Amino acid sequence: MLAPKRLLTALALTLIGTTAQAADEVVVYSSRIDELIKPVFDAYTQETGVKIKFITDKEAPLMQRIKAEGENATADLLLTVDAGNLWQAEQMGILQPFTSPVIDANIPRQYRASSHAWTGLSLRARTIAYSTARVKPGELTTYEALADKQWEGRLCLRTAKKVYNQSLTATLIETHGEAKAEEIIKGWVNNLSTDVFSDDVAVLEAINAGQCDVGIVNTYYYGRLHKQKPDLGVKLFWPNQADRGVHVNLSGIGLTKHAPHPAAAKALVEWMTTAPAQKIFADVNQEFPANPAVAPSAEVAGWGKFTADSLPVEVAGKRQAQAIRLMDRAGWN
Ligand code: FE
Image 1 (tube, rainbow, N blue to C red):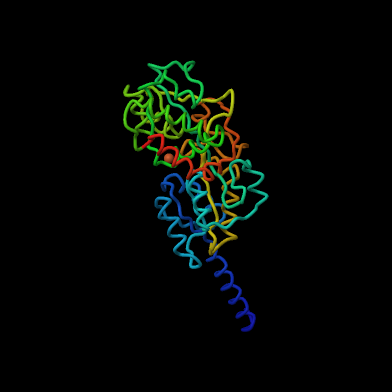
Image 2: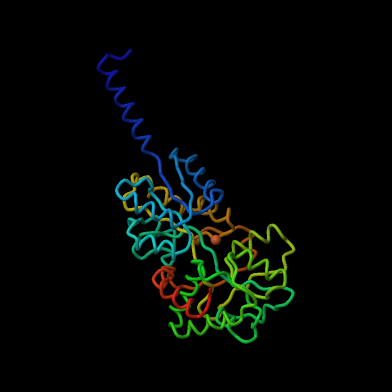
């Protein structure tokens, strides 16, 4: 039996303990669909007891909401796709850079912001897809070559409004300069077989249906459609293997400027770069782990090895505005 004073002390300690536990929560604003993030968050909660709340919406409203909440922030982390979007968040001043030896060791420098405002978590290549019925892979070489006369009336593209294409164009500008990049994009537009599509799956479906012979898509959309249609007459090609490599972009995460639980949030981000989390996170959407020590799924590995462009992906953000203007001038809708 405890003496009254010691009982009170024990009670106070219990209360302190309870308060500390209640703080073990992280709030994530996520533009990724729930099925893609829930398994990884569930695994973390199971391992650590830390609860993760997530709110899902498109990236623009989420970023606006973080900005509007200001110092009364509810979100600790912003999880979204494409370096172009993460760059935007950084420009809006809603992220809080932090350095972490764990993240630095797990994620290659080219897939992180040089400011440390965000880090990549999974990778996707934006590559060439072709009709196995009408194109021999030997006819394909580079993104640039899709502007050649050979592909006239044979190319399908997604809309220029999508950040994925803006990021790809940004890397063309970085590599070739604006004039040459514009020439290439004009060549692509000239070669279109039909109006631009609203999503990558529609591009793949159009190639499969014979509406066009080649297109440019993110790898996981191919994976998704291929799973539904194993006899899909479309394959992926890795361009620019003799020069700069395939354009790779990412999904990534950043700590918000006024995160209410910064320590817990940083710990979660660090864990998400480790092998067990990387495996779940990449596999669920057929992406490549951003941590090079972690192997992709058998399915993803089956698409073959390739050399990726070594440009830091933040180039996609730095040149985004320039890319949008260039695409507009070139007539890419
Ligand atoms: Fe996507």
